[in-house]
Image (cartoon, rainbow, N blue to C red; front, side):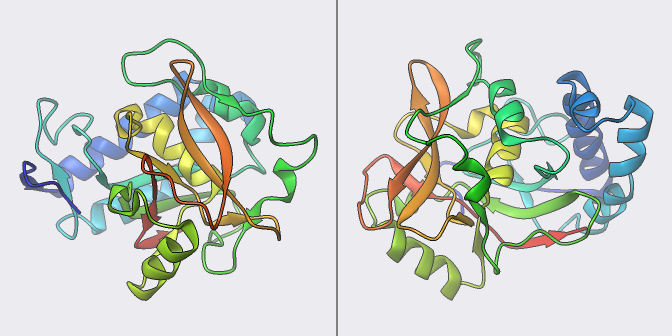
Length: 237
């Protein structure tokens, strides 16, 4: 999904490799190895096998063209080819959300108080969005912010996503997307994370509050003009 003004650039194997390495460097700089109880070298070794998958998928997706170009951090509109995701077993949501910022911002992201104590642990991946593998890391591919669903009832948006053979993002995947591509979260183009549910009508979402990213939730039957539904085409471990 691109906007009318976007021009897609093909992802070459070299560009995919460079982008994967950029994402790893970002996570290292943010302290993800310590969060996962590993040294930087151990963390790099943990995620290294996913590099081959990112390179192998080169050409099947596209970076939006922009000032950054495809060889560095892509200029993000609403679509990115892949995101390196670290699961909550290695990096708890309560620890990773404060590591996020808006593009060009300094204020840390935060979890909204509407999550009662202990409730985050109950928002688990749905069967369709369950991450593959057992090592706690995976590659999320063909990611879309989903602004086309702004103003759409979340339940209806999730049904449309499923009809397209795609799945909504989980909490961890949404935070990973924001962490590695801060440009993705902008005013009036925020997104729900329907891949994590807790058995009630709440749907987690990322939006902007007090000039910082916020992890909150909205009711699955209530539409918001500024809140879409993020989704992915595939996951690989």
